[in-house]
Image (tube, rainbow, N blue to C red; front, top):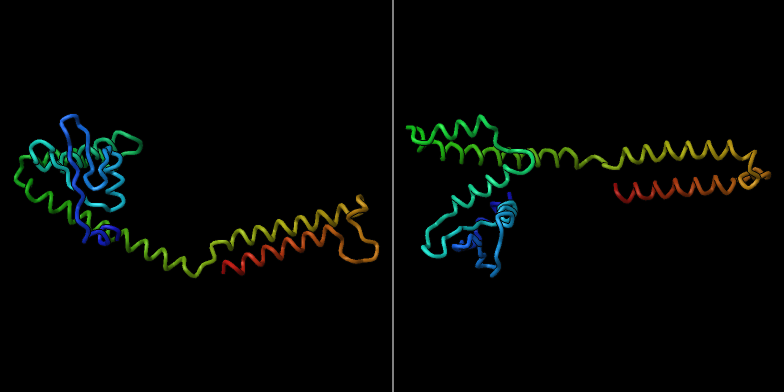
Length: 186
């Protein structure tokens, strides 16, 4: 998992200034919430601190990223989930919910990695171009038949000596090229 690979890396420090700008101290550049979202997808760990007070505001910034992501395109969080989450604030289970959600997300991520592994193992023995090869052979047979049918009407295609015509040679050579490609990929 990508997060495991970067577990030993030192988290990046992001400073948030009063003008709402975010400054990446590792790259000495200003960044956006989209940049931070990409850093998360790339498994780069970071913490966000208020530049003036030094307060850790990572949670607020991450929540802001979620709000921004939810406002665009397809939503990840169902309304029922959001309502349940809000209802837990101030209740007796509020202290249990963060640990439960963290464990659930870790389990989900592990299951996702296992599924990727299963799919990779399952597809390793298969030739992904097999269907294309089959379609290519069918197309070549159709072209060969069409060329044979056109031979009486076009003298260039016919060979009176019984040897292969230029069209048949071209079709045959093209078929060999497909076969060579299939062997290289196998």
